[in-house]
Image (tube, rainbow, N blue to C red; front, side, top):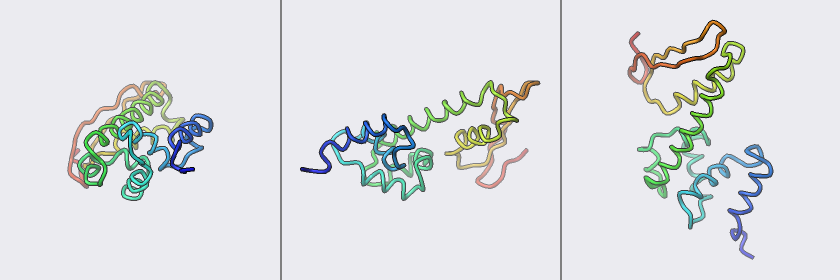
Length: 151
């Protein structure tokens, strides 16, 4: 029996049963790649992307120009990765917005990392809090260079 036969179904079932903790980063990336590349074994590509960019989140945050340099990554594949990244950013924003920020430092850091992960230049952002220290807005005030932002 071919081990690859049924791999996608087994991986999907394991993910649904165990959640994100039940799969490796490259396997989670495989699940994303299944949608963009329906007829090919994507495990080697998933592993190459993780090795190239350093992890699942880093792969999603990589600029499209860098992604398409990898053999097997088309514009369509890059678009799927960017859709997942956008969903992750929206989810993180929803978790942080309208919630106490000061008492949830880790959530604030996670939000900032997600919101700025693919930025190649420094930025000066203002996070607006209400009187209960709840985040109500996040605005980019200035964009700078790779290593400096005028304030």
